[in-house]
Length: 317
Image (cartoon, rainbow, N blue to C red; front, side):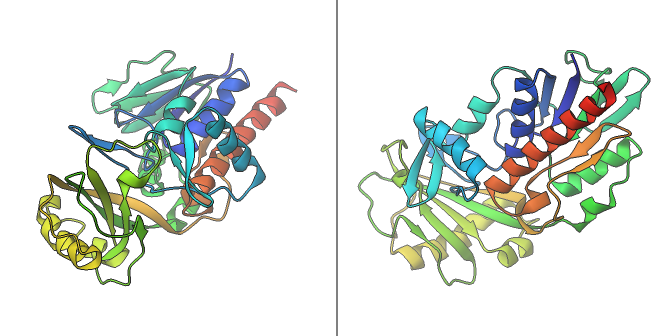
């Protein structure tokens, strides 16, 4: 059995992992978070729940549409609006389902890669990460944001200049919870505002708890860049002031927190489905390959899996 290590449990990494697993590869997936989905994220704070990353996704291509339809049939995805899909009961639901069947090592902050005589090694600051087959993987896939992928590849002496082409915008996300009877604002809004790019009533999404009126606010890229290194707690009040002016909701929140997404939105993509060095059996994939959509990450992960299968088929021919 050929074995593959994949760094990153977002949509690209999970797509590559699930496809390779289905084709008989031994897959080990590493991620620094405790869960799956990357920016398809759900934050839980006590009884409150927020989709504080990707708000919804679309399905423009036939392959991703088939996948979304399959998720719908299993109750993992629902339409929030025409053509706007969300995970159910949270955005992470499809990702958790995709992670079944192969080895997943969460809470692993990979810092170094090494290709030795027996195969690929995956290490953190303490050395070799405890995982089945670590040190002898036949191939390795990086499925993390491009700036992080650059550093990881260089730890193994690999230079992929195409990675440097990717550009991201950051995003500061504000999460708010109010009493259930609080009313005001549309279910979603893209305002013409100096600070806020997006407001969504999280509680309006299918399958969400009705114990509170929960909202997610995304700051504009330029505002987020300006405040990216500020204490997130200090950003609550200024964003809340804009939220109140735009929605007419002046009640005091039961809960308020801000989250910093450093690599939130792809502004410039590489323009290739994935990057792959056959001589090293090392590849990289992500939404940064094709564009700022969940579907782009899915397509990139699928292309990465296909490239790896083709490479091994050629070697064995």
